[in-house]
Length: 372
Image 1 (cartoon, helix red, strand yellow):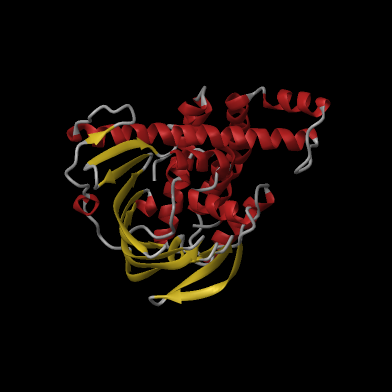
Image 2: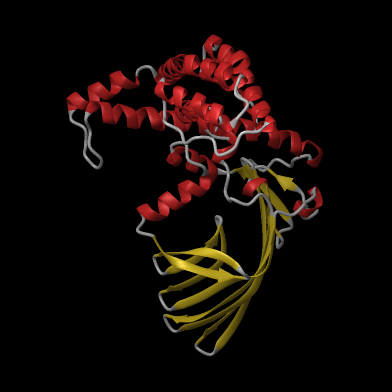
């Protein structure tokens, strides 16, 4: 959906981060999938020869926010003619803000908060986890060096610190590493995407489940616990992103250049700029909504009378002239599209905008936004 609708809704989303919860936790650009991998490794380090074989399976849904990984490996190690074999079997299930780790040797499962997701929220500044991961790779010196194909899927090749990954829409389909004489390869042998999955696909072993304090948990209450903590983590990620945005804005306003330590005067200016905190962000968001409201109301009235593509684009041109981010013209206009856009504008103007105007906190403003 382009033009008038997009102008204000993108402004609202980017400035307030109110839609950030679900999107920030997005790991992949594919909704669901099942992948099987073959694992191989060999090498010699400090007189010790190693050989690894194994397999891995990954099942994910909700763009990776539900992600189960099971891995079976056997490692053969030879030291001074003596052979030793180590076998490992692990399973990890990431469910929104929680992680379940199954230990098949001890026959128990540990439940804990997904700290990696929390860090992504802090580091991302409003980006989703996939975007944050790519940004972090670049910061660490990683480079996209080309493209390749695995199982017919075209993927981007990223290289970083002796490791080469072929990534398809955020999903590694092939990983090769050569570090300190140890070579390893993990390559997808089967893959299916955008498929229907059930709760049984994410079934954990029938082991007792414990929290980080060693308390045994009741499986019957886990879904409710996970949902509650997932919502809480999403809100915490929103707050962390807001604080980072406010901090970076304060640095710019104080004249601090990237990589430069702020002077005492600049620190004082930054503190003053950040004093508003979430209240300041809420005030800024309301100002932007008020500035766009006139254009949105004009758009609703004008598009209501537009029956042709030419008439719709005249409305678009007039709306662009009123301010905001210039948008490309409509490439089509029909009764279905007209109904959809007018319905959105009506919802935006008569439900979301009045609700946000009345909100006294960012938490209250967040509740005004539709959940996607």
